[in-house]
Length: 310
Image (cartoon, rainbow, N blue to C red; front, side, top):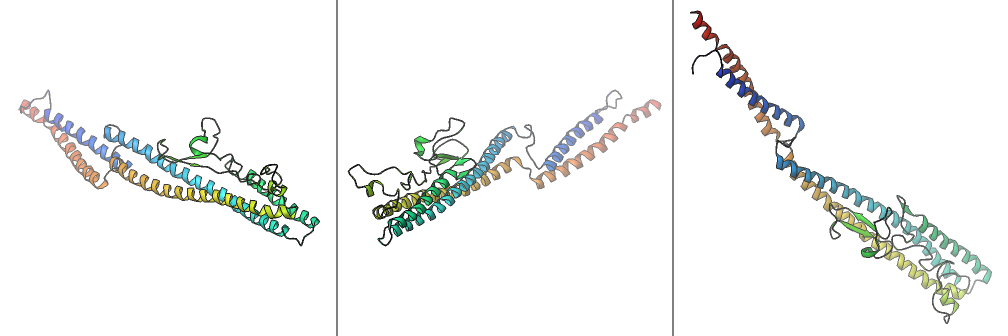
């Protein structure tokens, strides 16, 4: 290489190497300080696209877990109310049994019937008042066939409750329906508000079964109506219990799915600290070496001055 004074090629070469090593040192510093291997699209364009899709899936899975947990709380609220209704039905069965015996006169049966009607009214009140986050659970609004009765097109959905927990919109994978039949005393066929049963040819005891226990015949037929009400209530509770078990299993599955997806996203996105620290030290040494050599290269033109001066 010729000794010239117009261009210091050695200094230019050292400066280029210094810029390169210093840039890599800055990248290592950014990765180590942020913990991310892919901090910008320039780090790994394809990896960034895959990572962002995974992050959206992970966030959706976590929200799905919360959705399923909220649904479990809703089911527990409904089941708790049905448990109270169960106690009222048992008391009504006890009162019907009491009024069905011949050792009470008509006035006493009317007194017994008054408590019977009070229990019926309380069941109606519980069914009308039980709600979760403003959604009434036992008044019949959530009843119907899940496959056809649900309608979420309006601001307020109607029909069975749709619990969405998956990341897509496939009915086989991403949501369940919670259908809860009406649990009022009139829906069970009990109390004064219950619909009349049978035809006009049936006896009054049959037609008014479950509505009152003011006579011995009515009290005797009411016991079967109460039994049917208890069975209907138990079916509702059994359906809710099975749905709660499904949702608990769903939460477990979603947690495992989110965990594995998070692991895959981490392999793409997160920095390997040990490997990156090795690169950091390497680039640090190369940067320091380039700085030293640049200083030496900048002093080389002085040799030409010595020749001119000589």
